[in-house]
Amino acid sequence: MNSSLPEYRLSGLPGSSPVVVPLVGVAAAVVLSVAYAYITVYSPIGGYISALFVIGYGFAIGFSTAMAANISKCRSPKLAGALGVLVGLFAVYSAWVLFTFVFLRRAGGGDDALLSWSFLPRLFISPRALWSFVMLINQEGWFSIAGGTPKGVVLWILWAIEAAIIVGIVTIFTYAV
Image 1 (spheres, rainbow, N blue to C red):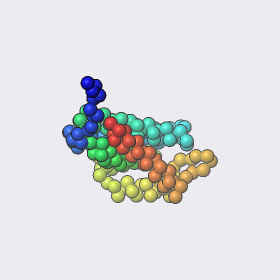
Image 2 (image 1 turned 60 degrees about the vertical axis):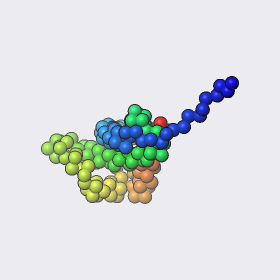
Image 3 (image 1 turned 180 degrees about the horizontal axis):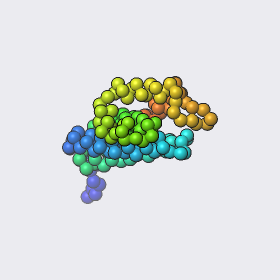
Image 4 (image 1 turned 90 degrees about the vertical axis):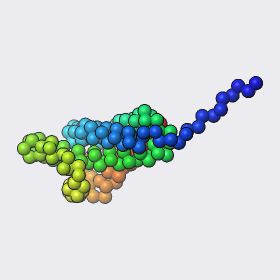
């Protein structure tokens, strides 16, 4: 008598993941971006420790999207990975929007009259305004590390690494589920 069980194979069915994963991922990205932005802007210990903030942000969103893929019964690793990439890219955009918002509020002394929370949705749908801000920050830099202020190409490289870490972690988590 052969007592071996047949090998389990994923069906490849998407379940409700094409709807659930992006909804959960977008919600998680927006909520977690608020915390990430405040930590990034107000952290008294910047520099190399900031890498842990990036990893934590990616981990939290990756965990959320992975759980959404699991609960929505996604049985297609390729679809889960693709959804993870999309959520990861949105998480990077959301982090930039919230960083800009928090940075500008701090520059204005946190005065609600200068930049109220009601402005935030308009900032989300204004990629041109966001891009202009990114270009300004890139020219001057905004933080110091090892006695210098990264700007220009160096800052672009750091931002690219940050984006790759976030998108990579979210994608790996979601694909692996």
